[in-house]
Image (tube, one colour):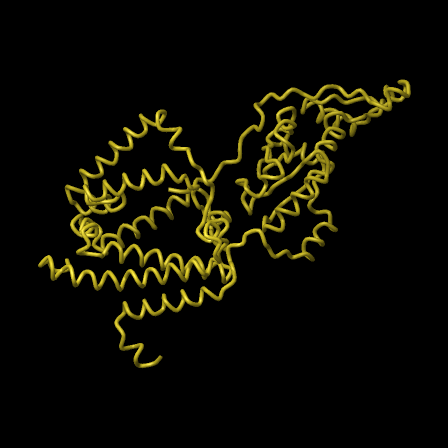
Length: 200
Length: 216
């Protein structure tokens, strides 16, 4: 029965080994997906290369279908899968900050590590920036703590929040993803013609 | 497989599979309802009959003296009661929080409340949520007080009684002599004047359950 960690199939020390292996796999998949390249990532925000949307949505749909059907079959206890609490205001602000950094620097935190490890200088400088930001945030934390912990909504999931069945949410997300893929393919063709750029 | 399916490009095939699984999901009942559970009633009933899930206070005392630490001792009483006195090494998880706690399903867990009722309820909640090794301290805190902290010993204590006395003293208890109580007036027997509870030497809770780290 999954999740294995919660059922104590292995201890904390070995979980780090597993995390390391999964992390390497994740980084490898990102790099092979072209996510070590800031141009491809930033292009998403100008809509002439929709690769980020396609890859992320594919990952979301794959993981969602996997979790949903595993729990249906009985291999996985979904109630034990960790879901962080929702702090709606701080998370909106944090999301906007992350998005701004994403457009300006061309990476999100994960992809900057991928980029740095393939030897790109911009990725390495981006990483330094992350550590600097973490340091500043840590030093400022006493000032931010009140806001950081505000508007706690607890553990919220879409089925509970919208009052829909779990299967309905799965269906809607899949439909949304397939619609987004079709729109992305079409948009890329139109915009590529208009901008005179090829799809990178 | 049909020929038209083979002819499709790999991304179209994957799209089709995802779409089918998405539509199928519509017809699957809610899997996320964590409050409804299957209970193997027979298995649970059998384990109650066999009495295997109950631990005598004397045995627990023995484990604690030997510093046997392969189990987690859980105090189900309220925080206030817990801070007044608790059995060494126990952690406080009031019964209403027992499912939301960090207890692991493969952990050996020994429960106690004031009496057997609270721990029996928690035992049922935990067992039906797939916790494997749940035990109850026989008599709960009252049993612990009666047998370990304030045991009544016969005056002509044999070696067996001497042992109980030593155990009691180990936990800061006050063994009482049976004859002393018998000789007092009946008023004293109605409300036995129990000596005060041992002072907690460790801050309440002792070592907390090591929380497994999660999230990113």
